[in-house]
Amino acid sequence: MTWVYLGIAIVFEILFALGTNATQGFTKLWPSVLTLLAAAGGIYNLSHALLELD
Image (tube, rainbow, N blue to C red; front, side, top):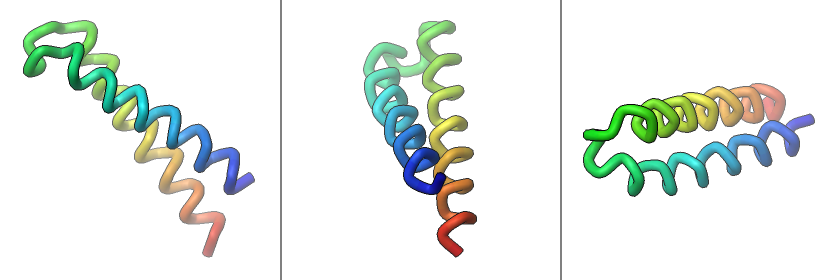
């Protein structure tokens, strides 16, 4: 299950990286919201992957 969490975190991090370009300096509302949600999702899934590795 660790690899599943890690794979999901990777997808969220890619969405975060692509979303930061679309926000145009966080001046556009919906791309900014989606970018922040992607960042939170990446951190959440990465933390679950790290907890299971322990």
